[in-house]
Length: 240
Image 1 (spheres, rainbow, N blue to C red):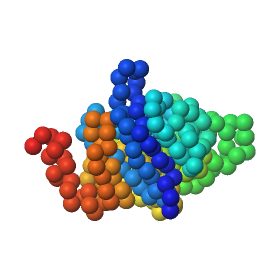
Image 2 (cartoon, helix red, strand yellow):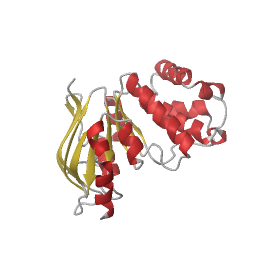
Image 3 (cartoon, rainbow, N blue to C red):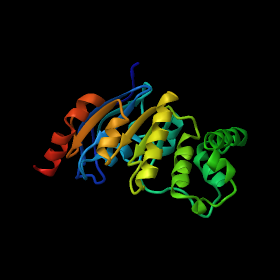
Image 4 (cartoon, rainbow, N blue to C red):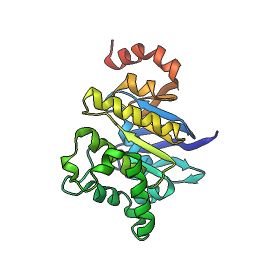
């Protein structure tokens, strides 16, 4: 299979005269799970935000499914088939499960029939959410809230799902549940990009891992290769 996403020589940052990304290159092969690891401040989340349209590349290209998407707005990126599940909680606690899912389909709000069908598909995928579809999202357990965020990300049948720190702040039991969901999505044929501070677990569920430091990709490789050198990689970040 070829590259579904190709990032070439991308330079980006939050201010005109301050760059966070310095010529980043990476490729995602269709149907695989890719993880980006690195120390805090390496630029991982900045890269994800640039791919998803929250930041515009100053230099370089981002090609998805054969089309240049660098500089598109977030809702345009969503329409192209990329879904983003952010690190921060994005649910609306005083709205119901169903209403939260409906918001995830904002870009197809002019097609209510299709939107309703997409919502029902997600609810069928997550029976716990289906049973609680009329419940306020803030009343769900932590695991169910994470399911809701993931379900909202799957609503529009994306080709690529991007997870930014999917298990940040979660108890170990819930983290295992999230990784199980990610494995299941891959088995369904989805392409997944994941930024993860839980380095060992993130690498273990991925086919390929990129290592990022100081806004640059400094290494990477297939799962087995990275796992064998993980201790040395982490020691390098810690300055040992």
